[in-house]
Image (spheres, rainbow, N blue to C red):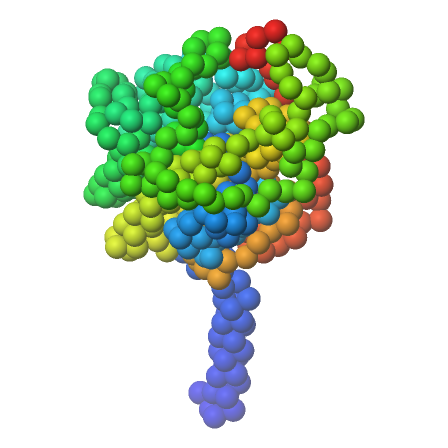
Length: 417
């Protein structure tokens, strides 16, 4: 080869290498993620958690260092909502990616048989090679026997008990002594710590922040012991005397909502007298502290096992809770922001390491297709939700939703109403 031809060939090679490097640089995130193995997934669901019920969420006195730590390296969906703001329907929607009218779990009555038949994203991941675990509160009826799609099954019976709870562990009934949140965390850590060759999904569904209640097949509830919100002993009275900074619409009697303005014998007009009490808000905050500590232990074990870079962590709640807004308290089903809006944090360090927020609407039905999308699996047919992946990549799709469908179903909790 003469010198002239050598220079021509050298320039061609240099140009080719430059284009390759430029392409790698312009698609750096996508390329790095595509080259990674399928991500592990940790899904943490907190019962009745308001969107503003943690430190960085806006709560004025609560201490949640581990939730806050997660948030600093995650996508915070500022406008996330539950399509049916009630425990059982929302839980089914997270698992299936479907509206309540589609999956059929429309209320808190006993839907045990139907819940064995749900087409869930964990079952799809299991079929595609994931090792899957459900730990905690299933709550679609009182049946806590194993559901399809889970290699490891640890479930409370119905609402579960805050102290000394009973579990179904892989088909066997088991009694455990201690505080329910700590026991659930221990089961979760044990699952993460197992040696495996497969990617894993851990679906951790807490009893907190729910009162200590039993719910029968009709949906009617009765107290377990004194009932109420039961924090771990080490956190009791942690926030004694603290006052929650309420929203401007707290204690305001509805004047344009006929259903809420009705006179009902034995019940006062909605207002300050009917609003959530400060001691309830405080005890809920104290109850969350054990959940926060458990989350910290989960984040620590992911780090110590060098799994954090390839593990998606989702932290969310099944629906909101009224802190006296419109004079309301424990009712959830209503189409108000306080009932519908949920916290939603999504951490996947290759994409979210610096942390950022998203304004677009996200729904509980979006999590199933999102996690399947990140696993490289097509979503289950007839899912109503859509993948949040473009938003997590920092894109702004032109056709993203600007409204959503909310469903309301009543049950037999409120006799005579």
